[in-house]
Length: 354
Image (cartoon, rainbow, N blue to C red; front, side, top):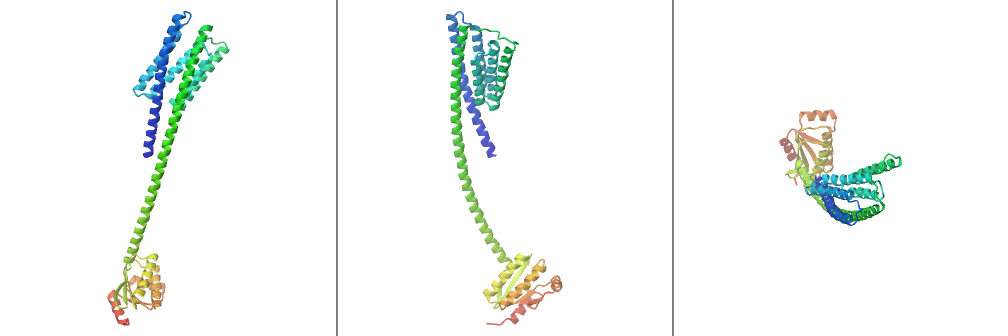
């Protein structure tokens, strides 16, 4: 979601920048059209041979295209304004070429129009105008070469000179504007790239800080869980001293290999800590007793005997007795009693005081 929002903001910024460039270009062109129209009227007044109507008509048509595009741009219709401007300019250039043929400067105007379309619209628009210009240029040139077409308007030498000079001056002005727009685009693109790089670096710093915080939190939670597990483990097999030399270790719930290994460690530690002579292991609360549990009990009894303690197993049910018989396990190291009371009586009778 955050990536989509950033993309939308960047696209909106880019669109606004291109709209501003188009607005500036349209204002410059409108001023240029008005200036050239006044110059053409003045020139026609002092030079009777100057053909005013086609030139003034072309300038007025260009002015209408620029004004329509500017009005659409003011209303927020950026894409339609681009279509009207570049489509209208391409149409005017095509009409000029059809009427007078290619005389040199028109090719540069086509080139400038293609470049500006790439800067203000998109690469696809620039490619489309380039293909259209190629079709117009190739069609007019081949039609003239094969004799299928001849330009209907013929310009005399003086008129052609003025036309060439005015077109080239306009071309130079447009080239200067294109270079200016390109420099603005490049400068803004570099500034935007620097801004994005700074934002990315800031995001990286924030992510690193967040990563460190998460690692610290995970470490803290892991320590808390480890302590909680140790507490639960201790509570699951508590060693209870009930008399001098006698301890009880009740087992409740499910027992597996890992838990029986912890029970054995707890039992041996309790025997050593309390100097127990008899350890009562109460398995009444175990839900399931299998071969792994029985084997662990035998190992615990042997470990207790090595420490000078005798293991008393209480709470043996009928299914546990059958399992002990079926496994054919040596129970000489284990004393069994039916319940905790009889086991405790046995321990008190067989302990050695003091």
